[in-house]
Image 1: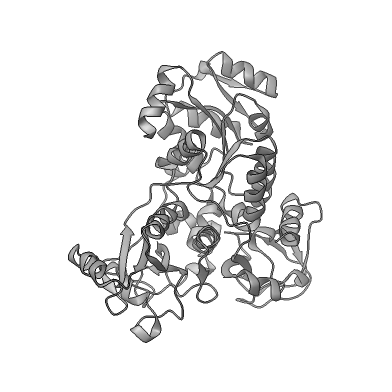
Image 2 (image 1 turned 30 degrees about the vertical axis):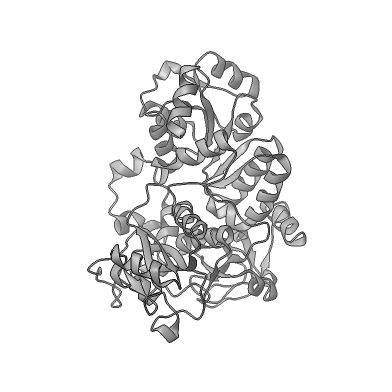
Length: 449
């Protein structure tokens, strides 16, 4: 059990030493949770804004005089040995330290995530990848590099892909067929074109909360405009080998009690053309404005299937919501706890050498780039959550066949042709940044599938 082993490590003064890259809302939340646990310690935090890293420690009751600003690997190691907590602007200091056991990448930026992930695996350290934006772009390659290095590359428990993957793995272990797996959304009719400027109003964030939790408007806008849900389900697809039924998924308005029926085959009264898909369940009614009576909201679900009459009888007897002519049943969890549950992935990697979930060596899905509004040649795209584009999940083979630009490569690239709102953007329509590290990794991944 994790708790017993962590207690033993605490008693032996041999905690799992964690380094976090990115001290935004997630990173600070992870520091807070780990501060309440035994057997693990956040030894170092890297952030380009040192105030964020410092604040993450202070709000978790680390005294200011116990925080050391370091500018090299050697001074970071000295700080850890002396019992202090290290902060640095450079994530490489954490990665290169022999005292760090597990690195958590939580920047949310594909370019930064690719660099930090690659270096972490090259230094043979376990990597907990919170940065799903990087994962859906080059995760298959990173998984292969981790395998070669003999370390763990894992998505994080607590975030929706990891939480859903736990249920998928449980279901597969017990012999159930996966009909559909996914997460809830709260998606209003005007959210698709939402921009970062209006995030505080949309989410009702106060100025105090924005400052205290270091809210990143662009990141939160990726939740609002739908890109984040598409990214997360692509990450799940590539872990579990599931596909989108259609580009962008169906994302119907559906209450919890109807999920197993709605996510059944068309011939069974559902909306799917096949089993084994990722999906979204919108909590907003079809009018685009009203919350449903019993929505999933930010929870997760898996629709499982069994043909055995005894098992069908048992599942029905335990009051699981049915669908698919009595063969499909709903498993769901109405919450996910993000940073609160993330330490489980850290412990699992460090103690057992196992991931919460890791991409397949060859991706089955991709996140393509779609124009958020009418765009003109010469405009600079700004990636997920920005002003110019959205992401949509697509089958990897279709994305390759149509030469579609991954969303993770769409930041700071110039359009070379006009694009209409809702149109998918191809590689041929942009001028790529040849110096981009994530682009280099993506090309390597594409040539080695």
